[in-house]
Amino acid sequence: MRSLVVTGPGTVEVQNVPRPSVGDDDILVRIRACGLCGSDGFYIARGGIPPREGATPLGHEAAGEVVEVGTRVTGIAVGAHVVVNPMAAPSGIIGNGGATGALSDYLLIEQAELGVSVALVPEHVPFAVAALNEPMAVARHAVNRVDPRPGDRVVIFGAGPIGLGAAISFRLRGAESVVVVDLIPERLETALQVGADAVIDSRTEDIVARLAELHGNAARRPGEVRPGTDIYLDAAGAPVVIQTILSAVKRGAKVGIVAVHKKPVEVDFGAILNNEVSIITASGYPTEIFEVTDDIAENWERYALLVSDEIPFDEIDRAIELATTPGAADKVVVTFD
Image (cartoon, rainbow, N blue to C red; front, side, top):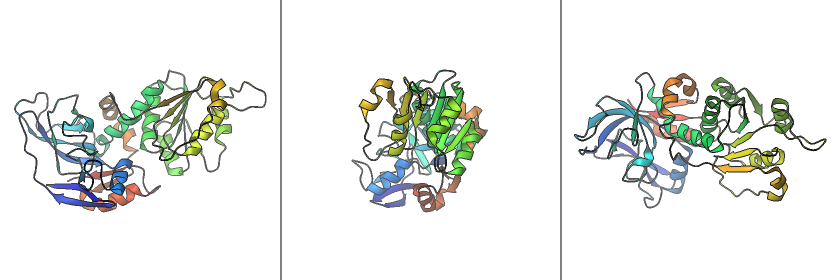
């Protein structure tokens, strides 16, 4: 079978490797779609992941069809459509330094267990949409961490897949208002389509003033502007986002950070002390990997708006270039015939 492997800094190769053998406790999934993540570009640039530098299989946002089932596996049948929990693989995280990657024709799921390593997906859900399950779990964990209450007013910085997934989750949790901030008009349009109440173009609008218009002014001193926003979520990863949030946040607000910041960000804690701001970080999906699956199945047409490009595995080089070029695409999903 074919499998995409990092072979050195900045280089990948489609290798011919043996099709996995299925043990009694395993299943074999024919991959039908696999999303490209920002981390994939990072692994390619650095030449792999310890301890597999120079030989790292890629791909962890997988959806596919079960083609073989071990004799001791229950609840999973040949032909079932499934999404995969890459964290559950005994041989290491799939596509993240483990022995296997989902950018392959087939993926062995060792010690397969329904609800732990895989979840079933209805056949009406396109594989490219089902492949959003893993990044949407990241978004859902971020929302769970800030714990929105019905009636909360929310703003999300960054209208990439995680930010848009969070917007959908905030709506499902009963947020009164969801506002999305970005600087790419096409992304802002998608944000409105998936359920945001309003968007702010950070290139042309005063973010703080606009939020005060949308969420009211909760300032405690005359002449001050502090939007009545209850929850801020950073899904952008730019230092200016943190600076903007902390300069405007109202007393008692929550600031969630799910974006990966590649450089240190200076924070003046003295300036925010009196506002009793809660800064909450979110990483991965400790329990959420299959919490989002039913939502995707029920609302798949809304989630489909997040997929900007579907590119066949035969054109994997083009897919990687598109996914790793800033602003060139929103969500690239690699498809398999």
